[in-house]
Length: 91
Image (tube, rainbow, N blue to C red; front, side, top):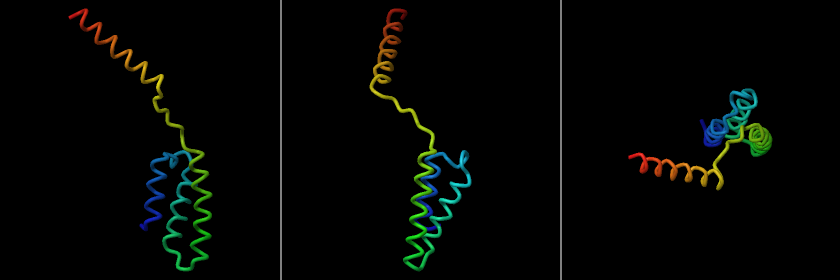
């Protein structure tokens, strides 16, 4: 597997889109292999252009990961403090 194909396969895995859109994910890896294997600059550019479009679509299909924000951090810290106070009161 070439450098581009390896990087694309890793990104597809990170995006977690292979199960929801397996054909598009496989197309991305296939196009990346075509970029790696292309001898002619025009063929490489055409494959890269299509790969960019497919990867853009895959990124749009990726599930949104919910990461904690400041409010979640404050809530978590409050819960930790309450638990510590309850343990002190009970122990």
